[in-house]
Length: 171
Image 1 (cartoon, rainbow, N blue to C red):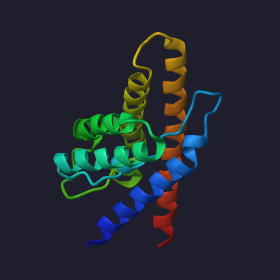
Image 2 (image 1 turned 30 degrees about the vertical axis):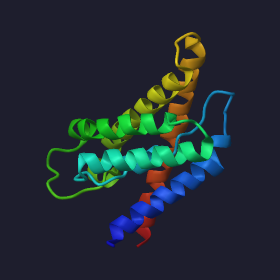
Image 3 (image 1 turned 60 degrees about the vertical axis):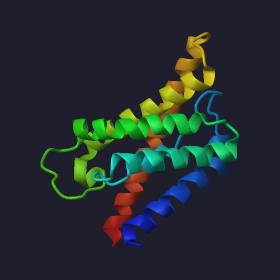
Image 4 (image 1 turned 180 degrees about the horizontal axis):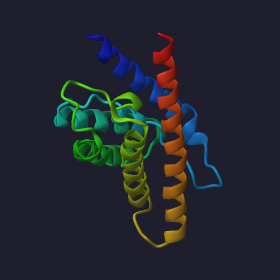
C-alpha cells in the first residue's frame, strides 16, 4: 500500500473516532453540531475517480450511521456531497494544476480552499438536516441547525488545515 492510501485510512479512522466520540456530543445552543467527517471527503486527491469518491463518501457516512443509529441519513448526505465534489473542484481548483493534487491551502490558496470546503460543508449540512427534519415545518430551527453546524464545521476544517500545514512545516 502506498503512503497516501495509509494516510487516507488513518484520516478516515481518526475523523470517525472524533465524530462519534466527541463531536456528536456537542450541541452548541441546542442547535449546532460540528460535522468533522466531511474533511475526509474534502481531502481526497483531486484525480480520484468519481465512483471511488462516491463509494468512500458512502463508507464514511455509513460508518457514522452505524455508530449513531441514524438510519442512513449521514450516508445519503455524504453521497450527495461526494457526487458534487467533482463539480466543486472544477469551480474552485486553480486551472494551472496538472498533476495529482490534494486540496489544501498550499495547492488552492487559503481563500479558494476555504470557499471549496465551505461549499461542501454547507451542502452536507443542508442535505443532512433537511432529510433529518423531513419537513420545513419549523424553518427557524432548521435554519439555526444548518447555519450553526456549518459555522462549527467550517471552523474545524480551518483548524484541521492549519494543523496540517504546521505539521508539513516541521518536516
